[in-house]
Length: 256
Image (tube, rainbow, N blue to C red; front, side, top):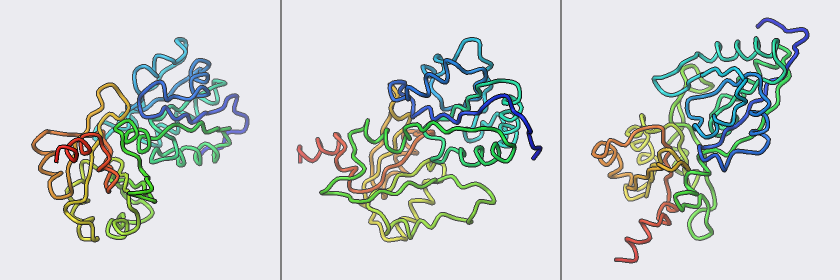
């Protein structure tokens, strides 16, 4: 990659959080208000985009399955070019930049080009969405461990496949990002790894937003429910006994 000897600006990798603007950090908001350029992803919510400096240049980078506006190397090239022209360049990413957000890749490329870069963390959907659904990821009576894993693997990644069977036995709560498209295969792997068909699961779409949707089920029936309801991405999956604490499950339990 071309080396930059004297960039005039700095790139900030800012996590926009899961959607609710109330969960956006004060530091992130301040940077948006001061930004000269903002390169943002598709899942950043409209109320957060409204915080952007009205004089700033906006560049939509996409990043949704089947709807990528820019390739990853194109996004990085733009960040480098804009940092040579402007003082404050914000790379606004849904959730947290370092949790399945490719922030690590972008940071490394910027550093290789001698571009100053700073990371501003955001609240990741894997924590916020279940909280808004009333599901604690850990609970003394249900789970003492949680594992975060991607259900959408990149071609040529550091290993060919997630070891779902090992994960099934390695944690009491599983949080799966970007797994709706591959859910049937993931369920089969988890069952092969020892989870029972009765293991509770919830799919959460548009977590923390006013239109948050939740689909409850078990490993035995969740694929049928997805097909019947047309439930689709973007969504995360929570698997484990903690899902029993969802208010709907609690109500059904109380009613016998």
